[in-house]
Length: 411
Image (cartoon, rainbow, N blue to C red; front, side, top):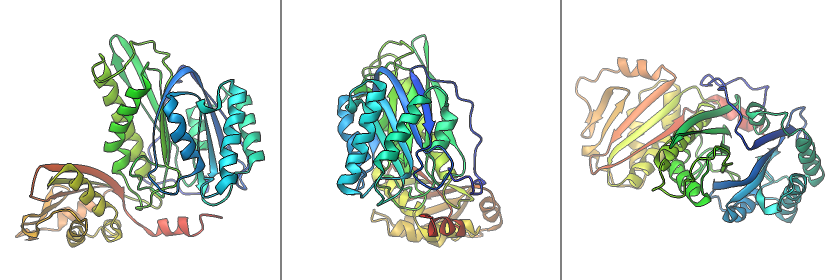
């Protein structure tokens, strides 16, 4: 987290988070950048911990993403290493060796197989992760295990984030209450199409790896894959879920297991909370924008139309300026590449319908719309009028702040 940045006006306070049994956290300073802050995090997980993950669809993924993708097949985890300030992406053999060396060092310290240690890195692309600093950092983090909590870890994994982001919830599995807690970082380069930057979820529930993967993938499709800040997908996007089993509930092995639906609902709720925190911290953001699309030919079509609106610089800048320029929404619908009929389209800002059947609504009064756009949460609803497909996505406005942050990002 860059403490020199102004905290987002959409920030939310860090919640009270209880420890998760089977999870120990340590942070340390590896010194990946010229800063005096923790930038490497090590999480030690209880033996038998189940793991699931969703990873970037970028065709230029980091070595850490490739490593996690291969290790997920094992379904079990004993450790997690996270580096901030250096994404280690587009770094060739040197980057692959650094990721393997650091996780091997972590595995030796924890006392497990290397393929039980997962990793993620975030920061500047194209700079190899320095192996000496990476190993020294994870060694120091191991020595500090148990001295850091979720708040410390959330700060340590941040880059351009302006506030620490976390959420927690619970579910009943039979007569056992299980806890789910997640931390996340992300502020820019957010259009994940799978996950969002770096997010880590921990639960004490007993969950089979295959079911944990199914539940996470389902939750992701409705949350992390429905947000965008700037339309750019990172090389490093990673969301991992770990289930330590410390709650000793009856194992959730499939959708037919008692309590499976409750657990999946809690996981989806947690993912949505985390996803919206990322949008609230969108670089330079002053408004959270929710876009609902109905009446499309399919849910997939509705999602694509929604993301076309959400990623439009013209729509986002109009919202930033409080301008109810619904014509820009029409433009974004038309360019989405999905079926749309001009004379069936309707658009609403807040509770006010502004356009319908290919034209402005007769007697349209812009005053209530201007008042709605003056707030820090904006609702846009579009009905395509062709079918039953629907989707909901979230974005933020586009301001001068985004340019200021990214014009000198590498410094």
